[in-house]
Image (cartoon, helix red, strand yellow):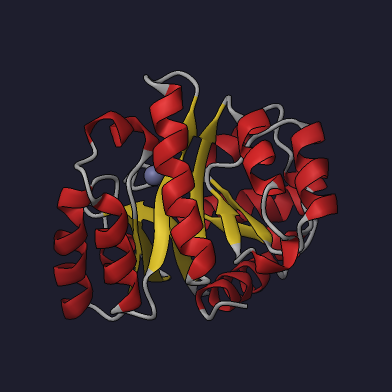
Amino acid sequence: MKIIDAHSHIDYITHNFQDSVVGTVVCTTQESEWNVLENLMRGDKNIFGAFGIHPWFADSVENGFEPRLENLLKNNSSYMVGEIGLDKYKPDIERQIYVFQKQFDIAVKLNRIIFIHCVGAWDKILHILKQYKKSDLPIIVFHAFNASDDVLNNLLSNYDNVMFSISKNAVYSENSRIERIDINKILIETDGKSNVILKDVIDKITQIQHNDDIHDIIYNNTRKVLHNG
Ligand SMILES: [Zn+2]
């Protein structure tokens, strides 16, 4: 069995710790982590890097982050964008929207995969998505996805390129939407938490979906995403 962790962070490179895990998508949360991640990637070809500023750090961004992110991506065609997004429970949502939209624009312009964090701000995310031509959007991975059926249906009926990365919480939650999500759109993730054992998450999804090929399907989904479709 081969597994790729579709969302982790610089302090937990999953494939160094968990059997069967052969690759890790590592997202940054702040600009100060960008070169830390680049150094990690130079020493380990199984790290797939996503660069960006997390909404929790939107209020501490330094001026000029936009051209610095754009140049970093332009100089490295395999770099993705993340973790970016909106979080209603953190300050300052207007600032978060500004920082998110700038980064989203750059990712769309350069056609890079985007890893999105969204908590309680789906109306705003859907509103922003609507401003783009659908065919211009790159692959968008919604991380730790556990939104309502309405949001799920809206995303699935409007966008071909969306994927849902599932964490342990989503799998074990009573309102899990996993049954409703097309298995070809599911990835799995630790979010950098060492107590999330991806093999167990796959076993749980296998039970929920009654499908013994789940691990191969999820692995292939992730490979497809990382090869940009
Ligand atoms: Zn994360």
